[in-house]
Image (cartoon, rainbow, N blue to C red):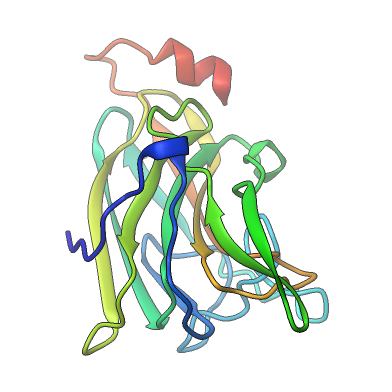
Length: 202
């Protein structure tokens, strides 16, 4: 896993200097929408698309055993400072709201400055404040990690990966956040206890 920045702990915020627009491609698991080489369409929450182009469903469903790890791989195709968050819900309408954002005034409207990061996330958030970065890499960034899936049964849960961006102008479709989702078929491991907190949270 690659890390190129430090997390600002005070007040649970991330403060990052200005750069240009960003895009990311969800490489693993396979996303619910067909992506182009930059990862578009990805602005509209909770799972991508745009108002004018809702996107073409991929039909992909990834099978995973509860209590085991799932590999997450993200290709940041256009650099922007920021961080990522991963959430899991039984249906997409149960996914959390985009991160609360502090802004400053810009010439053409508000510009994102920082966002809350939960150091101890609860369902439906699995991990927050991932892959924090503030500097432009020499090449496109590949971010990846293994994330433990709750030990539950879920025929078609929605795994959401979002990218929050600093120094970004507000857009009507996605605010300061880009979105991708993947459909997961989770089968609980009978040798492990069911994750009651996640069973209720899902």
